[in-house]
Image (cartoon, rainbow, N blue to C red; front, side, top):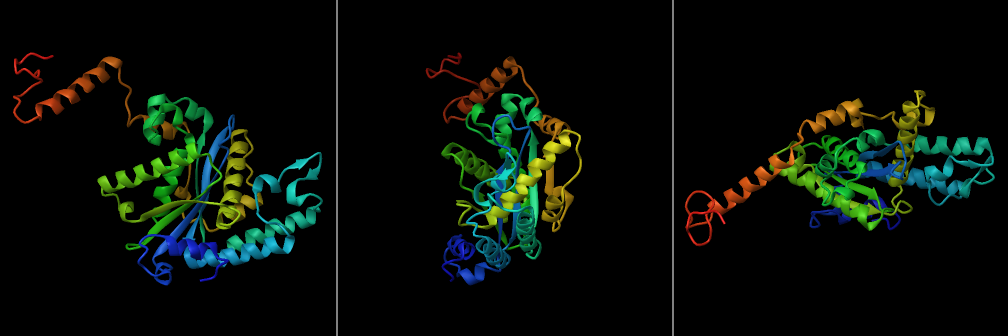
Length: 321
């Protein structure tokens, strides 16, 4: 195993651990994801990335690293690559000419195009998220508290289902997310991922046998996350411009999407889609909720061995306590 290949090391550590790494190469797909626009006051947030086989990711890794080494760049980050301050590029791109800048991104896009990796992404419009009740937000993101419900978790769930749907029987999709998140955010992502798997198992959904592990990784080492970063940045930028009435998709985004398998792999949670979600969680009055709670308590107590039908007090008098 090459010590310099993070992709191969990751494959060796996935479950089941008893299966040799070379066999896993043919029975495992990996999806790398990153987010963009999750900061405060952003008009939308997206989670996007690419999925592919381990051997394809190894090919990608070699090509991507070669481009970075040639230009003396340790890691590609879209939010460093594109901005200018007072006309000057920033970070490792300071002093670059427009021609060098253009050639660098073209070479990275060529690595993506020459690898059999497939894009996917989902986004949430902030104004539509803000319009949802705390109850709906908490339920659809599986947050333990309403204030921990984040729109990126809605996009994240959608991506899990779409990416895993491409697995053939006997093949699993493992997921890698950029680790540059707070512990609080990572906990929310893990809880959401576990809930997706649990629901899929309960409902015997086809993806229940296809979803593998979720790992957080350092994008400076896990180079496929840098491609996910590029795609998420472009998707966020395009969605923001489209909301402003500018529908032109720039060439970088078009090329990044060339291997797209299905238009359904890209999904924006707008008003019509949130209305469909809300239909699954009808609003209830406090009286109706209290009645439902009482019914649950009553059912639990009536199941206790030795008690008769109905809610009885502990002294057996038949009167509710």
